[in-house]
Length: 150
Image 1 (cartoon, rainbow, N blue to C red):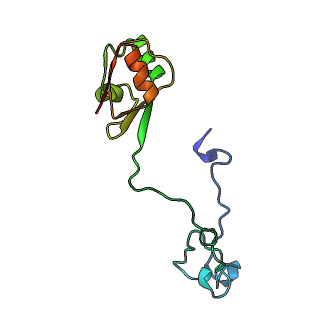
Image 2: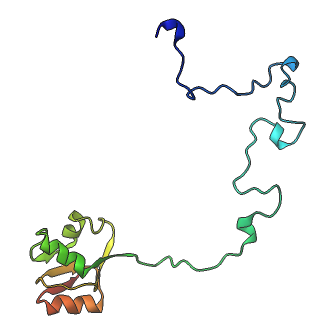
């Protein structure tokens, strides 16, 4: 390989672009392949998202439905079997508070936490959370632990 026979890798360079607006002799002068008049022939033209050529757009044809409650509180669920797994792995000893849940990536710092009742809990834990399901509270207390609502 010498400097005189260097060439780019196959398929890396594509130059089949139209050179428009370079005079009548090129065959692509004049209107520069944009046709005559209309919005699409002008500079600065951009079509709105969802524009259907003046036909009523889909997002306006389809009726609105449902209801979004602005006062709804979203809770991050943590199940009892997840807590038992953490105990088995030695990541928690006897108390589970909000900081512990954040450290173990079960919740984020701005989330509300609800303890859910899936699985079994054998360890005696003092669990602090924003909410508990009835079955979860029952299971924690049955294991000799304590459920503290924040």
